[in-house]
Amino acid sequence: MTTRVKRGRVVLLALLLAVLAACGGDDSDEGGAASTDPPGSTKPTDTEGAYAPQPLDEPATLTFSTSGPFEFIFPVHLAIEKGEFAKEGLTVEIVTVPANAQLAGLAGGEADIVGIGASAAAMNAIDQGIELSFFQNTHDAPSEGTTEGIWVRKELLDDDGALDPDKVDGMKVVLGTQGLASPTIYVAREMVEDVGRSIDDIEVTVLEPNADSLVALENGAVDAAHLLSPFSDDPALEDCCALVHETVAAGKYAALRSDLEDRPEVYEAFTRALIRTQRGYLQGNYHQDADVAAILAEFTGAPIETVEAAQTWYGFGDEARNDDELVIALQEMWLDFGEILSYTEPLAIEDMSTQAIVDAVNGS
Image (cartoon, rainbow, N blue to C red; front, side):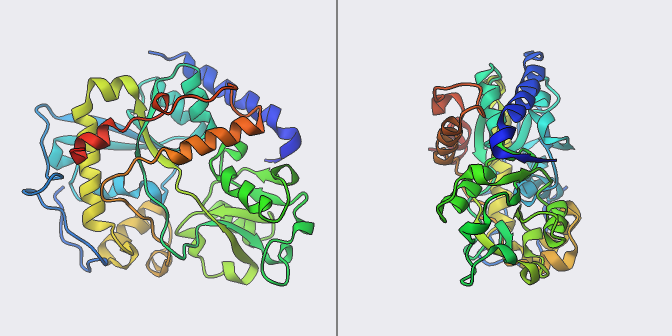
């Protein structure tokens, strides 16, 4: 579905509010050594350090909701595969649901944690009374020289390989499944403003930011697309397109504030196991680790050859840094747009985010 930015905001807002209305009705294996250690790898230890397992007094289960097998939430799957959650007495089950159903599932008790972007829908849900709280980044910025971001077909570029401002008007851009409400609109806005144009000059096309977007871009069905690793590393991209603007790291793990306050030890166990996994398997270019690459390929559905050749990797912070600066900037952007958010005055960051879980695990 393609929508003109100028004309599409009211329709999109109505859809967002419909989702939020649905939300409001529900207030209610052991780790093994990898065959090849990635650069900087430190394998998890069971006996030493702040991130050693601290088994729960009573075993617990958490349901983790994602809208797709994206690489930025891969640490959750890898921690399951490597038995890091089990060491905490924690069972984590992954469920895949449409992006627009994740918040309703969290509010309705169908999920305990959601892996989401810091989206307008999430902020609207908070404003509507859903006690959603971001408690941990999924990842930091991608590696230097990343291929992630907005790729543009070469016919829209000037002789220097930059976006041609005279070809911006009406260009079709894929920004994921949430369009104007997605954090990727932040990247698109910077891209067009860099050449003196406005976000109102483009059209937004809604597609999954994976193979669907890649195929649409390579076939010329769209003019530009926000692509994520490993699909942004597809060698065929360079024949048709160029990376014009790198992405931002807006992924968050979120839960209900009441759950974080009532069962902090369970969410601390989740975070501690993720930190061990990230420190042990996901430092440096983990695509070069044959064991991790095989698990990642199976998880994302990308060919193993694409994964192994990837030159982009995520910075999975070894202390699970929870960065609020982008959340604040995104909120300011949507308030400036008007009509995207269901409120007109900014929410306080403490109403959207908490540092308590990460601080407890890190001993801060």
